[in-house]
Length: 304
Image (cartoon, rainbow, N blue to C red; front, side):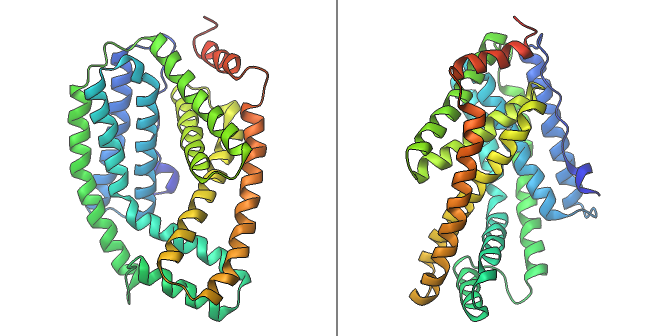
């Protein structure tokens, strides 16, 4: 199966949307992911790593939808739905996160002496318990196990979607949800602009991606994708670099090796931070961010 065939297709929320339609569109997205997962576990010829990636993307989309309509949902059932999406994604995270760390380190280590690069890679493999001596075969087996566990979580998610009362959702709730996500993105940008606050950057990353997926749900993404998509990628790179740095410190890497890596890592990170702030300025820097958000809602709502 080709990569673009694995991507789920969103059914956007129209301006006359109802809670029932939001529920139906969420169930449609879950159904697409469930069928893709069943096919991969059943021995279909698919790229398992891509299946994991697309499944995690779908869970981010569902969580973004939950943030969008949360003002109109009862607290406890809605929270359970949100938690189920997060747990499904986290259950598929360990293998992919390890791969991201190894890929990030390989990119940084290109400018280091070959022996130092080998030491760092070996330390990372040891501390993340990466499989050996048959990494490809063992990695695929671990992925398949994670996918089988995710199948059960998909079944639970489908049941939760049927239990949550969506009928209470109105357009005003979507406006409120959009304002909250946009406001948190603005807050993350402003905090990050004041200084290199790791927690602020990571929270900004979360809300930039939430807004991107919400605009997909509202069919408003084309004009914003050129900013929010590279912004999310840039903030994601910063997160990956921070995770890698922390993992290598836990690994007990030799001080001399770490001393050679740290300037390369710091320079790369600084470049990403500067790029993210530039993109953030384009996205959020205006006289009235609240008015910009209202205009987004009005575009979706036909000028209302």
